[in-house]
Length: 320
Ligand SMILES: *[C@@H]1O[C@H](CO)[C@@H](O)[C@H](O)[C@H]1NC(C)=O
Ligand SMILES: *[C@@H]1O[C@H](CO)[C@@H](O)[C@H](O)[C@H]1NC(C)=O
Image (cartoon, rainbow, N blue to C red; front, side, top):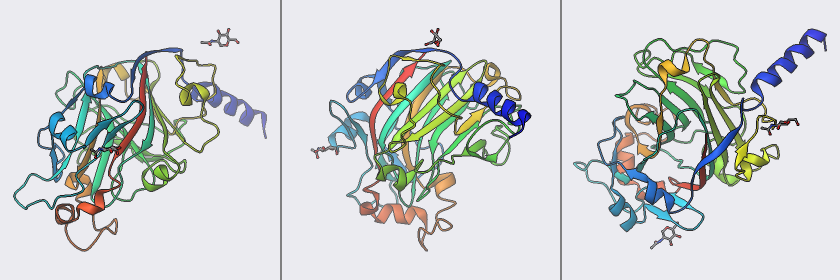
């Protein structure tokens, strides 16, 4: 190894291998605290999904939302045939009352929705808006039988990503402007194994960590449950996160040099949802080998196929 290479690796390690400052635990969401501190949204899916988002009371009555001492579960209906003139299959979309600016969010997730027709997401959205003002950050997102997670930003015009940028994942698209490429956003596909879908679920899930910093931009780390390199502060829910911990490079990194953080992002609320078909999953149903028919038809007629379409959250911790 040349001296230059050693120096540049050391530089990368210093700059990218961890969070950039210390953070202290601000809010912890476990079990029923989701019922107390999040809202159930019931509007028509803005991404045109074949979904009927139900309110909190309906969700609890049908056990589509359920809390125990140490779990919070959000599932979709797995019993009913949906009639053609209905809005779609019953599901849940929740949003946090609190909004966060510079912060670290640690999600300990045991299971995520997966299967043909599904399009789940864990993401954050500007409290002030209107979209895309203040930005959107997609932390977990995918469709159908995907195996790699996609993390993306969606912004007003003027935010893009340059290469290289010290991330583990693969660049899918570089312009974050929602007007470009039918709102594809700027996305990074994760490289580590088990970051999405059946693989993620098969080992009991794992941890997704979002860091937002005016100075450093947006970093997203991922560790599978079976990954021995997960930092103890993340896996054990420590009260402080220290920049002295070695985290390794993030799967997705969105630095500030061609996207000033404060210009494009303001305090965000967190969202979990599971939709079906719509703009992304509807357009990719057949190319994902999900069947000869239409996505909507599949969703309407196959309640049994959605048994794996649930979120099981161990905890969500936010540090500031
Ligand atoms: C609701 O779902 C939870 C989690 O899967 C399960 O443990 C519980 O038995 C369900 N309750 C009912 C009434 O079906
Ligand atoms: C990081 O390590 C240094 C040297 O051991 C120590 O002085 C400092 O307090 C640590 N910082 C944090 C935030 O733990």
